[in-house]
Structures are given as C-alpha cells and as structure tokens.
Amino acid sequence: MTIAITGASGPLGRATAEFVLQAVDPREVVLTTRRPEALADLAARGADVRRADFTDARTLATAFAGVERLLLISTDAVGARLDAHRAAISAAAGAGVRHAIYTSVPKPVPANPALVVADHAGTEQALRDSGLRWTMLRNNLYAHMQTPGIEQAAASGRLVTNGGAGATAYVTRADCAAVAAAVLTQDGHEGQAYDVTGPEALSADDLVALAREIGGRDVELVSADDAASMAGLRSAGLPDEVAQLVTSFGAATRGGFLANVSSTVADLTGRTPTALADVVRAALKS
Ligand SMILES: NC(=O)c1ccc[n+]([C@@H]2O[C@H](COP(=O)([O-])OP(=O)(O)OC[C@H]3O[C@@H](n4cnc5c(N)ncnc54)[C@H](OP(=O)(O)O)[C@@H]3O)[C@@H](O)[C@H]2O)c1
Image: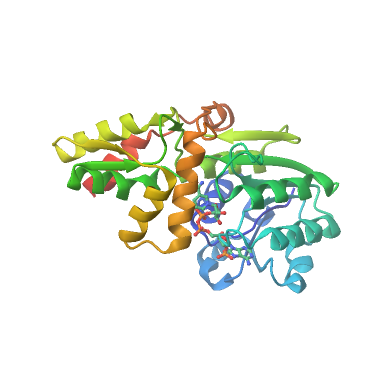
C-alpha cells in the first residue's frame, strides 16, 4: 500500500516519516512538501519525495497519484488555510486516495474559543463530505511550547494565565507523530476521531509547582482575564496575532476544551505518553 505524508519537511511531518520508514518498505512511502530539497536525506533512503503546495492546485494531482492512505498535515497559515485544505482534500479524492488522516484540534466546536477551531472544523467537515474514508487526529497543545513560559515564570516569580481553573492535556510532538504513523501503517482506524493527549491534564497550579521546582523559588499564580492576557503578551513583545492565539488557547483551557485525557498514544503505539514536566526538565538541562 502506498502511504503519503504532506508537509513532510515540517517537524511533525519529518518525525512521522521517520516512524513510517521504520515500519514499511520506503518504496511504499511518498513524502510531499513545498521544499523537496529539504528531504534529500529521506529520498536517499528510498522515499518518493514530491512537490506539493496546497495553494497551488497544479502540484496536487501528481503529488497524490497512486497514493492510497494520506496524512494531511494542517498548514501553519492559521485563519487563512481552509481553502488550501479543501483544495488538498478535493485533489486527494480526484487522485483516487482511499483514506485521508487529518491533524485537527480537540473539540472543534463553535463554542470552543481557540482561534484555530474554525479552520479545523471546516476541514473536518470537508473531509466528511469528500467521500474519502477519514481519521481525525485531534492533537492537544504541544508540550515543548510551554517551556519558555515555565522558564520565564521560574525567573520572574510570576505565572500569569487566563486559563482560570481549567487544565490542558499537553502532548509531545513525538507522541503525535507516533500516533499518525500508527494510523498510516495499521488498519482499523477509519471513521475514528482520536483525541491525542499527554498522560494528564495540568492546571495553572500544576504549572506553578513545576516553575517553583525549576526556579528553586516561590512563584505566584496571577489570574488574568483575556484583555489583561493580551496586554501582557503584547508588552512582552509578542506580535498581535500570536498574542491573540495564545490568549484564545487560555480561554479554551478555561472553558474545559483541552482537558480530556485519552489513552490514544498508548492504545495505538504502545508508547507511554511523555509528561510535560519531563519535556520541560529535559529542555532546561540541555
Ligand atoms: N498541537 C499544537 O500545539 C500545534 C502547534 C503548532 C502547530 N500545530 C499544527 O500542526 C501542524 C504541523 O506542525 P509542525 O509541528 O510540523 O510545525 P510547523 O512548523 O508549524 O509546520 C508547518 C507545516 O505546514 C506545512 N505547510 C505550510 N504551508 C503549506 C502549503 N501551502 N501546502 C502544504 N503544506 C504546507 C509545512 O510543510 P512543508 O514546509 O514541508 O511544505 C509544515 O508541515 C502545523 O502546521 C499546525 O497546523 C499544532
């Protein structure tokens, strides 16, 4: 069976490709990317590297030719990617792909305030309407992205959050990649929407405890509303769109949209999912 991964030069795509290349004959693996030159090493190992850009429909029919199972990695163009995702799904259906797997977000429902939800909900709908068989991988927030915030809290003695009493089931990108590779290489996952999470949902109190351990000092928890969160992130130098994204994830945490802990990582891969604390401790040691 021919398996393909889009966005294969991105960190998630490359990590998934590594797992897949360990599991199947490289001649059955197609890797698509906007930058084929970035995957020369994987081409040398036998993978078929092809150029694909979801915003350039002319590239897609050739890129997806002969593919049976496709991992469609959401692009990073938050708020401007739905048409590109729809084009990729339509090209996949036209090229004869049988099963598409999509990297989504937990609880992609209108009430979820995370700014990424509209793109993911629209893409999930396009996939359900496409006639393709589908699997949704609803990846929780990446654990490694929390390291700078914990480090800063440890240094300043303050952890500011608009997440209220909510909790988030942070997951590592490596665990997300292992799950994606499992769905690409195993049968039995069609029609499933999996929450892909770490081993526990962590509250702001848990993050404060970790910052205290890292910093070896007291760390105060400061609760902010969304406006105060935006103002604080802007004054820390984050661009507006990043501040908005981060604040919206805080609101999603507060609303309970990121708290579900699933057994998907262990069930599909046999791996014990990595805890956020281990990711942060390892990053700060290196
Ligand atoms: N769960 C989380 O916390 C979290 C955090 C960040 C991002 N994400 C999502 O997960 C995806 C994968 O993330 P990542 O960890 O690998 O980091 P990333 O650096 O954000 O990856 C960007 C990805 O988008 C692809 N891409 C961008 N424009 C494209 C286009 N026009 N056509 C086709 N592909 C395009 C890139 O592929 P090529 O460069 O190879 O073409 C690459 O795979 C992101 O794109 C984003 O949707 C999730």
